[in-house]
Picture 1 (cartoon, protein in one colour):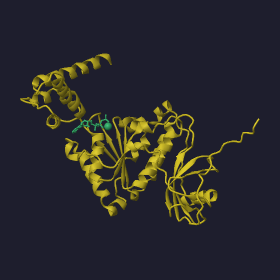
Picture 2 (cartoon, protein in one colour; picture 1 turned 45 degrees about the horizontal axis):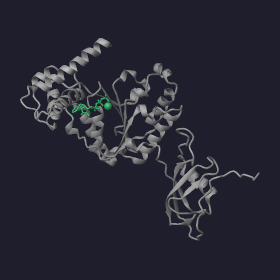
Picture 3 (tube, protein in one colour; picture 1 turned 90 degrees about the horizontal axis):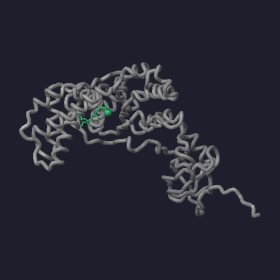
Picture 4 (tube, protein in one colour; picture 1 turned 90 degrees about the vertical axis):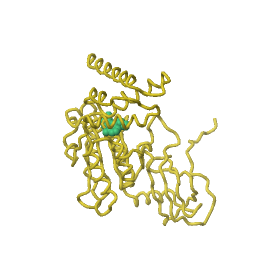
Length: 368
Ligand SMILES: Nc1ncnc2c1ncn2[C@@H]1O[C@H](COP(=O)(O)OP(=O)(O)OP(=O)(O)O)[C@@H](O)[C@H]1O
Ligand SMILES: [Mg+2]
């Protein structure tokens, strides 16, 4: 039988050149083959000069052009890096080549939002939060202030669902015109123990690279639980301690502000809660605010609302959230009008929406 040699990925065949390389930037790509869902390690480095030494030691003499793959043969055999910058083009790695690692790929791009269209003026009420956002944006736009000891660092938005916490984060991003990372805390829980902690570290590393930046961690209670609840998920202990470490580790002068959001501050780990210098409550809208929210969304309707007694609706919606007013009253009335080909929306459609929502609430109470 013919001898079968083990097939190993080879460095790509490169043309001969005497051109010496000045600069090479590599980005981790992963293995040529994957096993299961998440088998590629996330590679980054704490010490760029050590990485450079490591890279030169195995790739010295290679001629590289943009897009080529370089395979690791030391720590992670066959792990591929892609050359994303080669200066000059098609040149040879020497002992003097500056080699950098650029690793960004583990942050979900959907979480990184550089600008949002929501503005502060579209949010009804929530005055304290709006003022806080203005303070944050003033600090972020002034480098000297941001470097000072007094820059905002960790802020918690809390309150019942549907009252504009996430909306405020998006408006903040619009206001500051700098990068905001919108992260759902539950997405930080990985499949394997250790995934979550790694994701948190990556996130803070990425935020440091993008500074000035705001990190908005939505639904914080899903990971930062009190110690007596942490036994429900073993790795939550690790998540909490990683988060604490990162929250403490961020110096004010690094230009990163963490905004957390929760419906249930009482469930939060007390050490995490105490890291938030400011706790901003989002309340259900009052009488005037309910009317303003209803009018705001009715004015955006493609079908006009006519002859509506808004006061009657406002009276019947005490303790409703902004989300409920928008979705269960305005949106529901628009759907009804579309279904029956109405050219206008009247009290009838609104009363039907209200009735439907009330029946739903009553049923909910009955079954709970
Ligand atoms: N004060 C408000 N002004 C205008 N619109 C509002 C207001 N509050 C809520 N809304 C509407 O309700 C939607 C839902 O609000 P949002 O997602 O910001 O609530 P939340 O406080 O983050 O809720 P949760 O705690 O469930 O995450 C918003 O996108 C917006 O359309
Ligand atoms: Mg939210």
